[in-house]
Length: 181
Image (tube, rainbow, N blue to C red; front, side, top):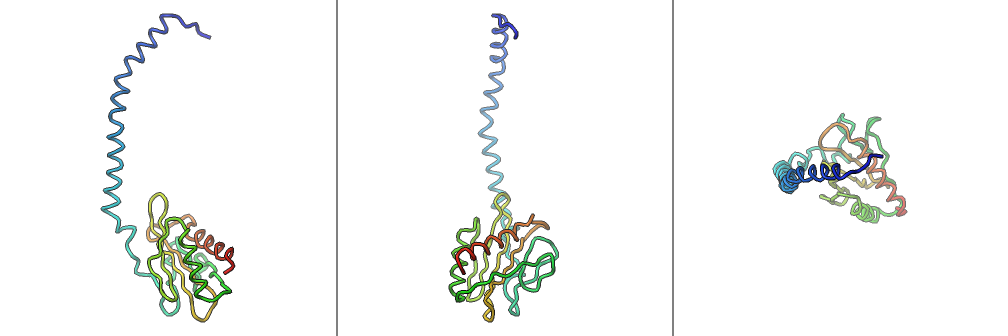
């Protein structure tokens, strides 16, 4: 163990005394740097919201079917799917109105999800990713002749969603099962 002498202590003190103005200068600039980053983030998010919140033209029910998925893997659908986009519909054994009310309650607890359209047989919700705020369209169709809820969830941008759309829909399915719908 090195021996601490008066000479070593004074050198250490002088070094810290010399570096103190530099540390003070950095500390004075830090709030400005943080403020600048926050300001730039706000400007970008307020200037370009349309790129991620723009409504997709391929939504809704047409000829009693939800829209098919695009070729990208960031989509799942329960009606007429190809093998990579296939997901099962959500069955229910209560009346359609009760199933729909229960689904709307479930959607209120899905993080960053907002119902934007609600008709007799269709629900459209938007779900945002946590960090980058990417928007996914989440759709539910209640056909009159079946006791199932057909589902579709698709990312608006990008190619891969790392399985987020499928996991979200499976979590909603599990919630509906837990509520005995």
